[in-house]
Length: 372
Image (cartoon, rainbow, N blue to C red; front, side, top):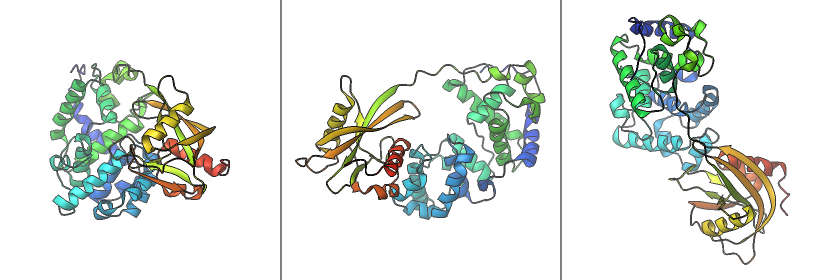
């Protein structure tokens, strides 16, 4: 790894960061507790998610599932409903798998070391280090996007941080600094690094003038802080056209299906449909998908709503159509779903949907009787 820093006093940033954190730390609900379960939960929720978004979810979640035991025993539908809207739903599923591991293998208590924590589902090196240092005081490092950005500027790292070798080298750098962290302060130091990256050492237009370690930041001294970290361009994000049916039966109920637990958005409910193939119209693709997924025949009617949505690695345009189950159609059978239900429009909010499908639910609540 190419580090161009000439400042021999860089380890001093540790003391400066801890002092800054003592004075400026944000007042967050998971910082008001020493409950390891709550700290673990907060770290999982904060992955790829803004702090302001997480707070209300965190507070509702610990009220509904106040203990690891309660989480382990929760139904999948109850769990996913509590997570609805937070995104990255595999986090919720993994959280429950880990809770059940803890009940079975650890007597209901969260392991205390980073090494043991990594044995749990959904906990990688960063999360293990954060939990171990914050909840248990272990001298374990953390490296997330915020820390990568801070180190890239402080140490003026010229290598592409999208490359795994660079990430590995930054992790080794973080490990090498831990012996200089005062005993029992690893949690404060790690939180300070992450908060500095989030609040001051921001991706664009960092607030270098008020940064507590600006005198130790090589990129700032060179005036190139906006050129760090170095990142190669991402590949173009693919886009797919997807259709779904807002399907009514003769009792005016709507058909919804639950996604397989091992697929994207697993455990969430949706309006059934799928990707449109080359050469198909949206209506033709929808009819085909419904036959393949559920074995049903429908009358694809008028266009209902279009929803744009971006996932981590691709984007979709979801085209929803009004549909009627034909009288001669077989009853639905799950060929590519875990479960289906016929539901009255007023009861749709009892089920957990992904963001794109929630737009359809919201539209149905605005005009529930358009489908006649």
